[in-house]
Length: 259
Image (tube, helix red, strand yellow):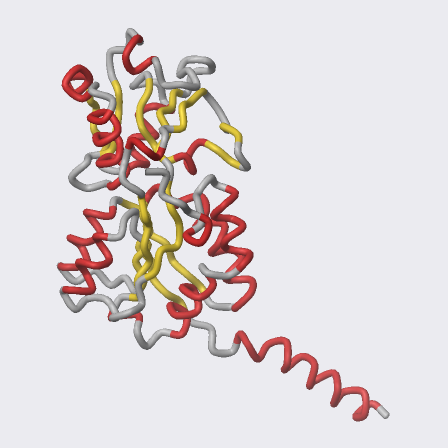
């Protein structure tokens, strides 16, 4: 009798643990703007698959440099489409593995309530001493901020006030600590479910800067790792897309270029 009960019980246990017996770990380079959503996505991915993902956050430009010098990452989630393409062309990424996982939005933000108006008029009328943005040479969101200011004919006036962050996380830190009155960051850093989590901001119209198409790519080091392939597939799943949208990104299939 005991044996009859134990056999189905053992089978049930094996079925539960079977998907996790070959769990692997993958190393992922992630653009700083995607810190919050990727942290959430990874937690859900690990629960769903049993695989693990170790995340490193930084500027897309610096990651490209590190990868060219042998950094051991297996997946790259960039803040643009140029960096993954460059790695693919250099033979450091798997051909035809690139895809756009999110479309970013730029926001002018201050940690002070009611400081930035909803039309961004503070840029031309404000009396601030500093304005922060990520280094345009390294960070696509910094390049987008530069383009937006140029299109508003404010670049020459405001450039002397620039405080450059190494990446978008450092830029956010400058503003959130009050060392800089306001600056350009990713909407995902300061909003959730369509509302600012603190301070005040102006969502920069997407007509003022080129689309920020954020591409993911499987790197050659991850080609044989099932965890790397599984994570890239999970990024396209409904749970992952819901998290991406929650932080204010557009999804590739929903996007229409406003210009």
